Image (cartoon, rainbow, N blue to C red; front, side, top):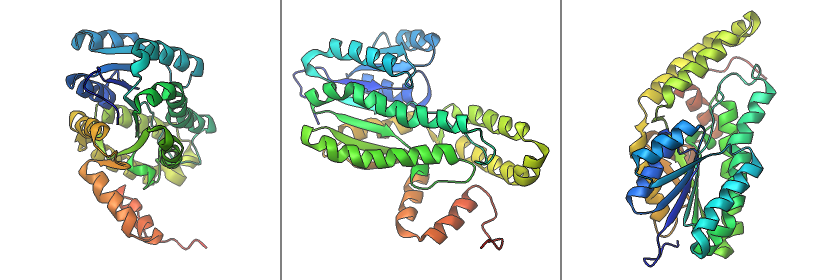
Length: 295
């Protein structure tokens, strides 16, 4: 990828106000990159810029607001000039757990708006600058994009969509020297576990008595297993090291599992049958994998 010694390299990271995104931004700043990013709140931008002595410049920007994304991208690319952009890390994302049958369609659409369409909006806004530098896009996905799990439907499906877009972008952008890397983290202890636990509790408490009868016991088991996995996941700073390394690896990798659980599960996906994977995905979240007589 680009990044010649005669110029200062530049990186853009969405969702850089906290968690994994912030650690990725810090990783690039430590390597001498000019770092630009988005945050959800002005308090995050001020805190990060103060803590990093201005090495990371954050802007409050909702990635689902296309005009705002374009305005932010123009501001960044104008400051970069003819050097262009070396690295774009699409990290912003949300999680909407729950049984698909009872999740409001608007909540599922919102997940796709942020995780998928927001990512596409950011990519398109920065492609002219990436072409100038023959740069690299890193899309933060998840191991669930290749190994979807019950009660994690909107997230798994949105990450699966990103996997398909990654393959398409890789072919379409190759003539311009722009590489596309799909990053596939496993469970991470990034500050998110507490938020996830609160989301799971909110879903459980919002169920009607009929929904509770249908899904309550299974969702409780899923929630306990999911909370355990996240709490024991890879630390954000360790995950960020893998992401920054992938940004500089030559040649560009196609997919990068992040964390031992992601490596193990994604290898299993390549080796097992669909029937075997169905059993494993149920076991992963402490659900009964035995068939119940469905036709």
